Structures are given as C-alpha cells and as structure tokens.
Image (tube, rainbow, N blue to C red; front, top):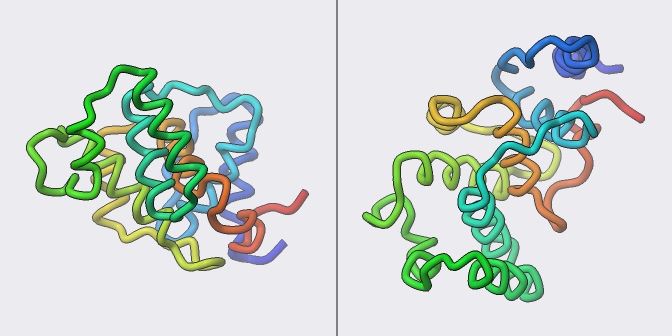
Length: 162
C-alpha cells in the first residue's frame, strides 16, 4: 500500500472495530468517503430529499440522459416541486435551497467535477458539508456525486486495494 493510502486504511480499520469514523483530512477525504460508502455496514441515513437533490445534480453534471430522466422520474414520484428541479443549477443563490441543501450540493458538485485520480475537495467546501452532515452522510453524498459514471475506484487515489 502506498503511503498516501495509510490514513484511509487506518480510518477503515477503526470502522471495522466499531469506532465512529474520524474526520479524514485533506486530499484523503474523498477517497475515505468513497471507501466508507462501499462498506456494507455503512448506514444509509441521508434523508430522501437531500439524496434526490444530490443524485439529480450529479446526473446533470455527468450529462447522462438516462440518469437525468431517471432522476426526474424519482423527483416526481417523491412529490418534489418542478420549480426546485428547475433551480437546481442555481443552488448557490436560489432562495428555494436551505443552507443544508447548499452544503450538500456544493460537496456533490466538487466530487462530481473532481479530476480523475485527484480526488480533491477544497477545504472550505468540505468544512461546510461537515457542518451539516455526519461522516456517514458525507460518504453517501460522495457515492451519489460519483454516481454510475463518476471517477474510477478510489484505489487510484491511494486507498486500500481489494
């Protein structure tokens, strides 16, 4: 394992022994969240509205027509407003979004637009997200941000291998 993967491996080791996840720092954060999201024991605690907002933004950023259409279907099935969907790209300034929504969407946007293999999230974006979400919820958001088309496996960022 590369030296860069050691913080992530230590983090996962703590989780395997039932300890709450510590905050992974700096460039290891995204790799840690992606690794955590793949663990069967990672609880799915993110509320449905936030998950739908995050997955729809990730779909739109990926440009995948199927993902966008599927997200819109899920959106309608959940009874969310069309106005909210229309303003999704305007989340930083639209009054339809709460501070929690903005933090989630900024985090997902950073994940979705992260360069392949770089897995870097700017510290202010990460800190804002941590102000609203647990480490487990951030793992869910990271997985939604990567989506079906996102970056390759976190192992390329120095995370633990299979």
